[in-house]
Length: 427
Image (cartoon, rainbow, N blue to C red):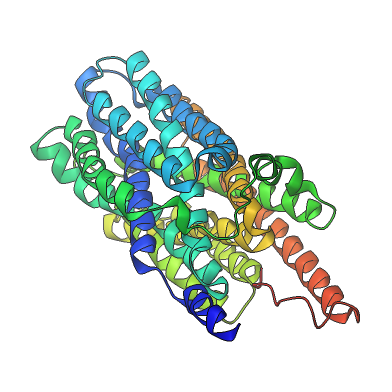
């Protein structure tokens, strides 16, 4: 019996690096395409002779499409498997991104970005679920953070390359290059990922559908934490997408040219990657909710500083990098909390629904920013106004941490289950 179980033990403790790399690559392309429009807006507005605020519907419906993708992904994975969902989602946003380059009006652009958003939304939860399921349990939070960091890396690539691409080739090539990269990845996803790799998933279709139901997220043991996590995600996503969508435009009020304005997205991306690194390091010593409280507080500090800065371009980019650190850490960390909060068969639905509430915030965020920009509100007032939801998010994640700690102490003190329960990842 021992000789039969030894290979299984080795498999459960082995890190599947190839799977992790493919999942990260898919999410990197997701992150690139997510901010591609925000990077391109100053150039498109100039090309089409329209006000930047005219792109508010396109930005909002992109996020709406992503939110719908998040909501649907749990059921899709239960029916089709993670590999098939990841592959199909990448196909959708590859085609959508390519067609976006040939759009000629706000209406066309908005429709295409909505369709693209459906693919973007399905990729992230499926990739996180697949990568965490096939790797050791002790690494689940770190792997979730690593995969989610792909969003930041993709945004960074779009921000760094956006200005040179727009300046030398035109805004259309921001989308074309992303589509080409996605198309190259497709065969690697198809042959490198396998549904048979994923352990712990229900074989019976009815059982899989049951575990993918949103009702499982409201079981008595996790109900309050689900609501707190959803509210935190909503607020953090909303504020981040104010800047992800409008920062290049806001920076033009500080004297940035349309060619240099995309560097704002690059600053957010660099700060986001630093924030992800802090999450990985911090989660090894502290609860994830404690780390998220610290990064949320950092975001508040940097937002207040940015509201009172003058037109120093380098300093502005540095401070907005700090804003990206705090906000994107929250966006990444909420998925890591979801991974450790729910049973393995429910993880995809848990990650998807938490992220979908975040994406609902990302629909509201660009609308809020677009309205204020359209009204001619001063940039410093816009920045200070978004401090309020971040402060509320900080209070929520502190409450989530306290409830989680209390439940952990209750489980550890229960005499009948103390020896039988595995130690869960700290949330």
